[in-house]
Length: 234
Image (cartoon, rainbow, N blue to C red; front, side):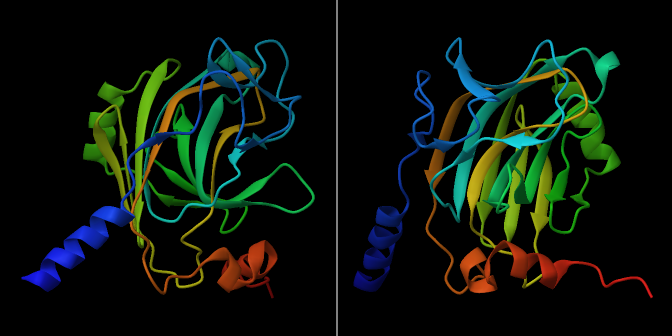
């Protein structure tokens, strides 16, 4: 009984209370390009309402996270006639050296992309897409060009995502060469005149999982990418 009580108290101590990652006034604690990202009307704001986005840009946490329960509200707006309007939230990711890009899991956001995970700048493909039943429920719940509330829970090899309360992602990583820690970073995608707004960002850190691969143990961005890159064509 004493052993079980001690284990319970230890687990409770390791599991932190949810904290805010954005105070609505400044971008303290974030790494970003001030030409692209700023605070407007109490929201993290990226992109432009008048000019096309020429390349992908990310604002990311300065802190590294492994297991967590992340909540935020995000809005992607603009004129679809100008090009692609898209965003996403990088998790367990890293900055790519020498540029504005990031690599790692991206929980997508945008018309035709809600409910998917794209492996950004690593495997470079969709690694999870909703089933037809999940997609039907999601289509009823989302506001394509309005505000949508995301909850992203990453624990061990499992990633779950809810959009406006609808479970749309339940992905388990099986590749031992994929890092299960990293930064968190909203994106503004290139292609159209796109404005991305983010607010009410909170995170609850969960107890870490021992023995899992990390960006450091895999040798960083370049080494990890080589491990999972497809073999060259003959």
